Amino acid sequence: MMKTSLSLLLVLVAVSFTFGKYTPKTGKRIPKTLSRGWGDQLLWAQTYEEGLYWARSQNKPLMVLFHLEDCPHCLALKKVFSGDDDIQRTLDEDFVVLNLVYETTDKHLSPDGQYVPRIIFVDPTMTVRADITGRYGNRMYAYEPNDIKLLASNMQLAKKLLKSEL
Amino acid sequence: MMKTSLSLLLVLVAVSFTFGKYTPKTGKRIPKTLSRGWGDQLLWAQTYEEGLYWARSQNKPLMVLFHLEDCPHCLALKKVFSGDDDIQRTLDEDFVVLNLVYETTDKHLSPDGQYVPRIIFVDPTMTVRADITGRYGNRMYAYEPNDIKLLASNMQLAKKLLKSEL
Image 1 (spheres, each protein chain N blue to C red):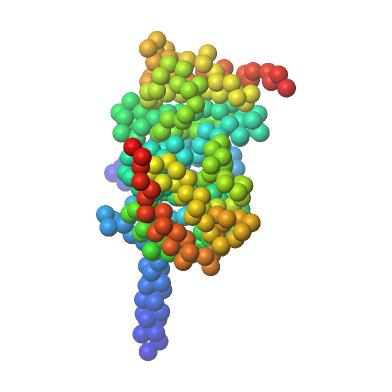
Image 2 (cartoon, helix red, strand yellow):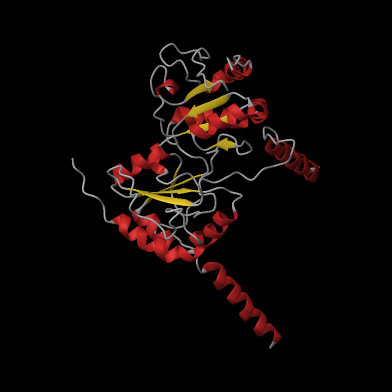
């Protein structure tokens, strides 16, 4: 009798957990994270406005990373980027971070066009650091997996903040 | 001997899994999802630009939900909103969805001011549906948990698309 009650209780609990949980016709989905795999331990801003706000209020440079989820160059860079402890630690401690799969309306974020992957630094004075570039003349803000050391040294450049006029 | 090799292999595997995984000084964090708990099965846009793009290309209305993670009214609404199968199904099938914890620069999204929670519908013609309101005169786009039926009927209003002039 005791056993039957327990089973019944378990069924009820299971039903109440299932009830009210919408499942798409195509099957359950895995929720997307704000990190999109570029560093699950980082506190990613959701939008450019949010990133700028944090950069100003924390007086830290903002790194904006444009990418696409189905671009092989992006996936190759993501693997190295997310697995590099120094990059991840420096970003966590000294930067505000934002990754975007959709362009903003701000033309300053595409100094030489819209392409992916593309990494742009923004000073907390809200100045886009167009001077901090990678090694490719035709895509100045692109990085390949082999350029991870250059990216790390560019991050050090970005940390030398421009002086605010205020 | 065989056992020792196996143990050594296991240690090596464990080390290689740990290596290259940055952990913040304050301890491991749980990555934030784009849903932020408002419906883990929905495909949330990340930014307003992205939401508008999807609304136009899929010819579906966009729902923009402004909230904060530490606001009690938002948390109460979130509980009802995320647990309501009809709301979730309709949003998944007929809407583009976006939730924001930070305001955009677009004034059309705050017809009577910036407050949370606030729900604004946008037609795929990119017209903000300022005519679709809740029941509170001083905060026309706010909804309480008890207003979930009104929200559902407002979603039906939003689904009657405005005709495009194009």
